[in-house]
Length: 71
Image (tube, rainbow, N blue to C red):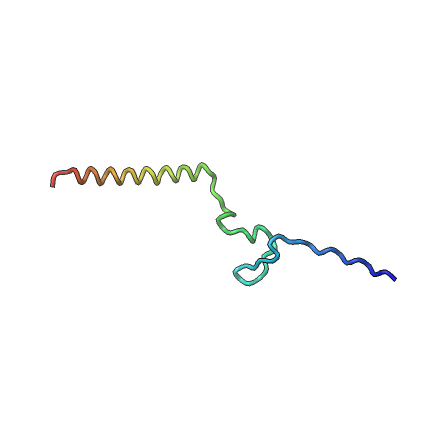
């Protein structure tokens, strides 16, 4: 007599990984770090990089002007 076939098991992404609480991570969303979940748009990163660069240039110019003043 033939046995009925087993139902195929679901394949979960990241099923072999564990979270910080020790429980299994079953979804790709839970497996992703917080940095990948909340990614900033590229234009926002460019604006931030431009602001940091301008602040650095302003600081260098300020040091040059202050050092050039008579003591």
